[in-house]
Length: 303
Image (cartoon, rainbow, N blue to C red; front, side):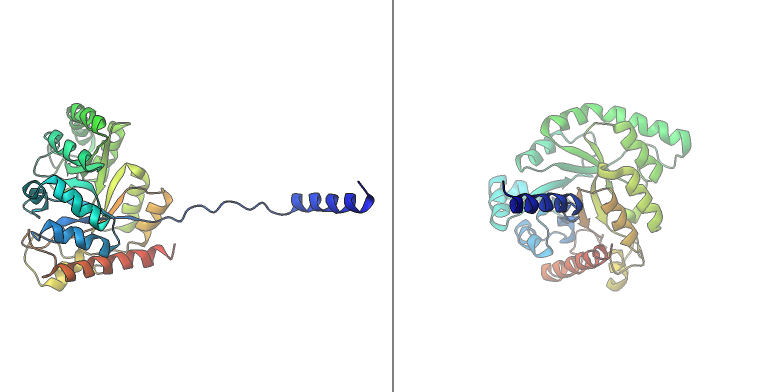
């Protein structure tokens, strides 16, 4: 090696030691949007599937009566036809919401969800209501114990059972949710987190998200607004939607990003009466869901 080559290579080696190493960029955090068929009331399942990609969602959550009829429609038109419709529009049936069955009668539904490649069944947590402290903790422990045979079957299907924090249910408070995932441990038991049913305090909701992490299988982007239990002007009813009511979703999104949330995000509200679209037509309903999505994406871009 001549002197010039030696000096050149030595200088390059020194430079490589002093230059900062380039780190592989971490993948950008994003929300996995899930469309709830109940947002379209009793409209045809084919219509809901066609609308799904227009909301920037690739995943569908099918609901039965009384909130929708898409789950019943699946059986009426045949699962093969449903599979064809899903494939045509690039949509995956990922979630089935079955409050009607409750947590102890889901085995047949597990087989259906598995058939479509889905991964979650959402239901409610049955048991005594209005408990606090030790009584609540014991009741949640008993609920999980009763659920274990059903969770074992869910594991065989590769399905998670997600319990929503629904009002007037055993699982309705932050403490009940924390104990649910604590007693569920490594079982395929998770949470559908619905801010509507929690105090409308962004810091509290964000703290709960950090405690639950990816045991949250479905995050409902849904706030209380003026509620959903009585008729009211549509502009008031729509206050349940992100970006319309007063709840600031920014701290909530910060928490989801902090835990590296990988579950589904379902933009949601309830109309009154149940079983109607949130707005008169499928196109209007889709536009409102997409407006809420853009609100969430705008907030997400600031964090």
